Amino acid sequence: MKKLLTIIIFAISVSVIGQDIAQYYSFQHFSFENGLFHNNIYDINQDKKGFLWVSTADGVYRFDGQNFERISNDTTSRYALTDYNVKRILTLKDGKLLFASTHISIYDPNDDTFRNFPKLYPEDITGIDVDKSGAIITYSNRGGKFAKINPDNFKTEFIEIDSCNYFFIDPNDTIWVAIIGKGFLKFHTQDFSKSNKKFMPSPIWMTCHVILNENIYIGTTNVGILVYNLKNNKIAPFIKKSILPNPPNSLLFENPQQLWITTNEGLYKYNLLNKQLLQFKYSPNSNKSLSANQLSRMKLDIFGNLWIASINGLNKLYLKQNYIIHYCDEPKCQLQLPASQISSIYIDKQSRIFIGTSKGLVIQQGNSRKLINQNPTSPHIHFNNINTTTDLGEGKYLFGGIGLYLWDEKNNSAAYSHPEKNNPESLPSWVIWKVHKGEKSKIIWIATIDGLSAIYPDI
Image 1: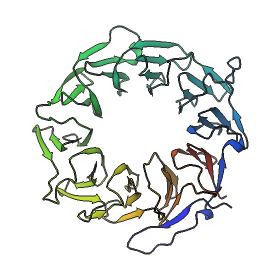
Image 2: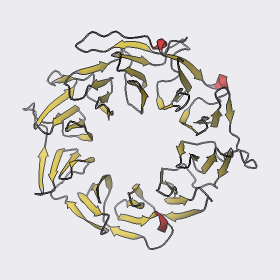
Image 3: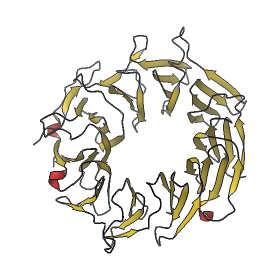
Image 4: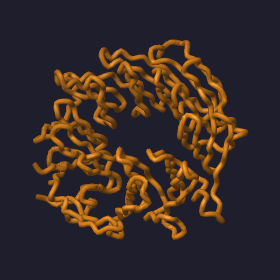
């Protein structure tokens, strides 16, 4: 059995023993030699019959567990794709697969056929979403065209909307399109090609949004925060720029009365009841302030703690106790991270906090102040922009980014894999795009920029 990962011991207060990953998994690579003729993997997905679909820079392949079959682009055949350059493979609600490139193609596993739609755009699709009815909404920056596609009969409607910088579909199946410097177009997916689109003029540049109950809160660069009520269809200023001069980077509700706002000039807390806005900023003379003013993403855990990523580490704000602690790579911080550059924050169902930094992955157990550092022992390894997180069950997690991490909660052990020169058993590439676990086979598929790999659990 091949050894996949190099074992790393957790740096925690109790003694733990790292276990050999080979006790759990065998590892196999698939690339050019196996019939996968291009190693740059864009996406992977699995249909309801168990076939694995792989999109690469040289076309799409289907894997039956033994062989890779390259999908033809001979459009005279019902079993062919129009475009090789597929970047995304999505699962539709009826179990069909959607392949997105400059074209849209839909594969039906029931009759093993593709339905190919004519070329939508001169370049790849920029954005794609699906409404409640299953209609596919796409957009391309090149040419400024939106398309709505009925996946059953491929009837397509086009509209031209130029200078879109942000769009989303709300819970009522209404499409919101932010047009740079001009305002919003708002229309229901059923009224896609009709001319009665409601335009809400506003010289805005949209940055973020959050939906709470019947309201959509919209962050902008130049008019503060707007609020739109889904019941009365009215949009109004929520927090004016004169009150909130700094454009929001993210919005998060602690509860229906408290809204938190990150900006490049600190953190804001807005009370919806008394309309009070409080600002929190970095102070070099206080260890009770934020670690920096330039803030990005936020997460709220089940204990009522707010996690805030900054350019100088991570801040954990205990909302109930009104207390803050800092995570960074400097001695002044209460808890040490391998690096202050935060790439990701992930909170699992057991309330573990996974903190991705530029030099390591750190795990915090729930509300404990103990950190589990998963730092690569080799000095040349700089980890970890997490692109994908997969729950393997039984307390095991896989993290893909710059390398691949396995965390085993039961045994208090961790393992790391990366490409090793002259070692065919190591990963083929540093960059991991996606990890997919088969529902029935339990095979774990790893898409990289230099080939496809699979982990087979021991049975």
